[in-house]
Image (cartoon, rainbow, N blue to C red; front, side, top):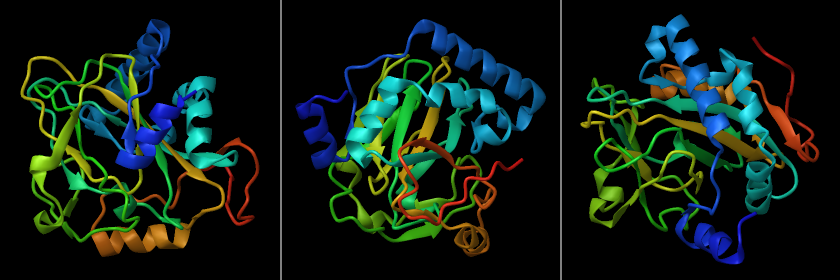
Length: 254
């Protein structure tokens, strides 16, 4: 569980690195599963936006009780997992993630998600660790973004440079097995991997069930934002509690 200091840090700054670490067996399982996925689907060697659409085995790691306990402290007792991604960043070729807010991409209304970022390798400034603008979530709104389809980017919605000051950025340095949690409105990004070491990271996206996963909005977002991947076909997995909105669709999708 998050202690009171960690929970206060999350509330104030929009992220936290808790006193928690995945075991070596879990890390090895994730690495092996990712290697099998890339062998089947080489296009995911750098970035896979929708892990569970290709291998439901990753769901086992989303059910880690300690992780769910921490998410419950942030979101409350009723929440669902709606997606999981893998940012692999191979040595010297990993792409850059532009500065953005997660809520710019996602068809969840009201906008609400806690992301668990799991370090499968050590994440450092040299190999492209996550960077955040502390406290940028506090306004609880989306800032101006623009579409950037340049090569070498893992995502195409980039925050307008006038909306943030990169001098305020903080590196989230993690050892393999550590995790961070961050808020849906937090401004964040990461640099390319210029090192000789990979920087694999797996994300788990949890939403409170008081919000609605709007599949019609997901379809519109693909056209409006020129997204390469839409979320209309995501399967929602109820992790704890009830669907408080009464409007979420939990049918299993291929």
